[in-house]
Image (cartoon, rainbow, N blue to C red):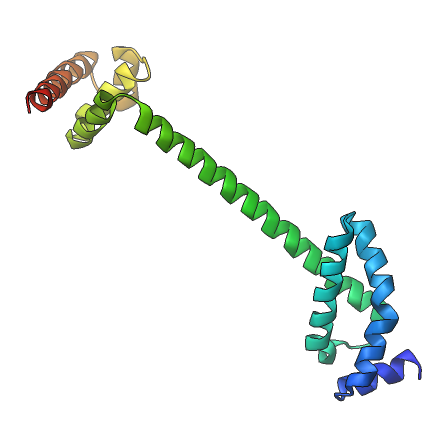
Length: 176
């Protein structure tokens, strides 16, 4: 039986014909995937996935290309999907590691830092921003004024009054 006959029978539900088709193309597909993946086990796994997909989608084979080309297309798409998933997983893991590291660093800073963050979170942002820009990022009062569209004197006043409030809150916390 030639390949066209096997395909027609497989499309009609003949499992023996489908089995023969897959057997005829198995080693060809494994060799292709070994060249693409450069990893024998990955090539075997992708070949198996390709065969399963072929069984599920045999009705979609339209005969416009060789059957082996159709299988290569399926295998290539599965490989590309696998690579995308790996990249997404790697990016997610890197993000999670960075987040854990940052949480660990914050947790291991002195308690005062955590208290200052809590107090800053309670201050209006129009006062919090100049304090952060001045004392954490080192901008001058003039630079902060330009960024926020405020007079330099207003920035100085907000930073000064804001810091007084922060110090007062910290003193109250220490007194508890």
